[in-house]
Image 1 (cartoon, rainbow, N blue to C red):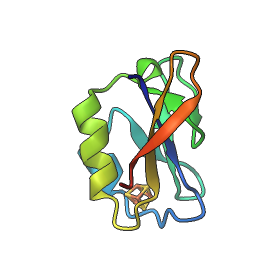
Image 2 (cartoon, rainbow, N blue to C red):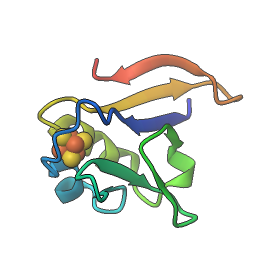
Image 3 (tube, helix red, strand yellow):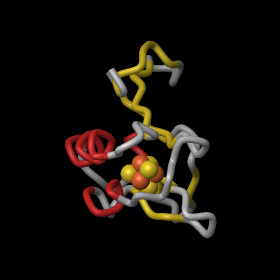
Length: 90
Ligand code: SF4
């Protein structure tokens, strides 16, 4: 099933482990919070489909697991993009 990822900006403390592990997916914005880099060049902390990210599934997973405050949330979606279940934090 397809996956999507988002950053909980309220939890993110700007530790940047995610940026170190998956620089193709994450960067810090002007507020020191992690955002997700999309293929179209835009960035957001909201849910992004893995299909719109230039990175591997395993890199994104490792980045999420590296976050000290579990601010990176991964969800599984159905073919219509609707959330089925939360994959991480488990
Ligand atoms: S590792 Fe977590 S706390 Fe650090 S910048 Fe990334 S999302 Fe934020």
